[in-house]
Length: 597
Image (cartoon, rainbow, N blue to C red; front, side, top):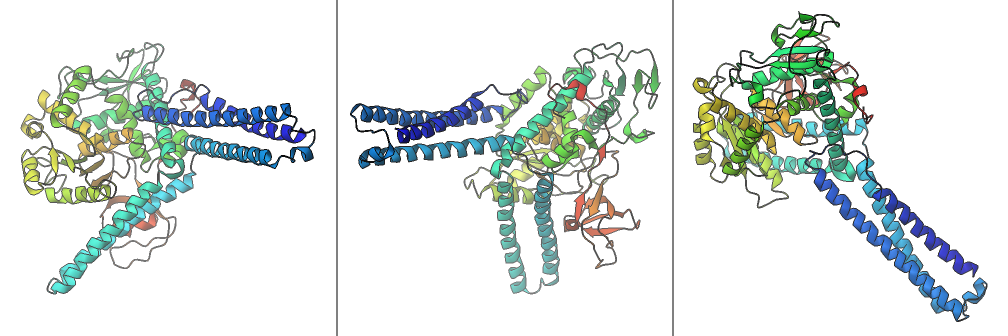
């Protein structure tokens, strides 16, 4: 009987473990990261499915134990089970059947343990900072290698144009090389989501965003507005929409860095005379007036209640926390999560600022229905008119579409029949017609009326404002963005894109500049390996050298200045790593009850 009791104890213990796992999984969850998280319902649905699976396994094991108990009772009543193991072994058929059922229960228990561990790992697993930095370094290295090889092969092709057999071979090498890179990029994307990384990244991005949005809300809604320290920002900077939005973000960052409530003066806004609140929701529910006991221009003193902030171009005594800086208390988490922490940080301020009024949201919803906006889709922003010849060079629609085609060629590895959609935004209405004529196998979505209102003569009208708001909105919702980062509209769309994705730092291709923020602090890179110049225009580098980057030439080389030697020139991009600017911001932990910092 001890033998039978021992088996019953083992199965009962297995059942107990399953019961404890079930209790743990069914226990009330902690605070949700954000009720507005677009992925929340999907994660909850998966969790319910997984719990149902575990409950079924639990029920099956209960049934095995119940059958086992009934058989033991039956054997006991018939006098077959003796008081010791030897007599029990006198019925080998029964023993074999019981052994088989116990092994079945143990297998189910092991499977339940593996499932529970795997699901727990998906939600609790956090990769090391070194792992994530190295993984992204490999991704950038593969891309830089291909840019270098492509440029060199094109240069070689020009030199041997007279030899058709050689040029044909080069063209074949370029085509096959692109296919190699396409598959490698697909594998890297897949790698970034394996072993719970994708689930961890979604949850971490939601948690961090929720934390920042809570801080901004607390900052903008002080307990007593009459006593709150304030920072006044005048919206009417003499520039276009994208520039003005970035001006407000700069003001908001300084407000966060000085722990002051931002007061936005927007009446008479050149885009809408009624002001910001006619289009977007107010920045505060309770504190919108610039009144205070003491008033001064920046920088004032810590005791000054109200400060007026100038535009970033004329700012004296620049604080260290201007873009591209990120807060130290979140720096490790941001660097682990995101490939471009500064863009993520700016995106959080835009997320708070650009909450549409109901009529603005209705306009966007109606336009989405009219255009038939749906995913997958690539966004293109073609800036012409006043930018070409001054701030930016002319780029043909063919240049944009080359990168769109590369995106869809990767997507076709898993979606062979995908419809190739493009949201095309421009200030030149002829671009949409040209694109439709040249690329008939694509479905182009865009509004030529928006393009017409974006022209210089009609830029500061109500129709123009609605158009630019719509373009930024839809560009930020695309899966991949092809544009020129010399345009602030393009950079805003990229920044907002970070709020819709855990890490969209690589979801773009700029035809000119790297990402930057107007009036930013220095953007530096650090040499990982030495470099001996091969040409006179190249920099000499030692490991640890800091280089101020001016731009990426997309051919394997970037341009910048070596801070140690003060030499300007080209340097190999693949030997460098980003230097993230980390600044001391004030502590906001007292406004948080979840201790997430």
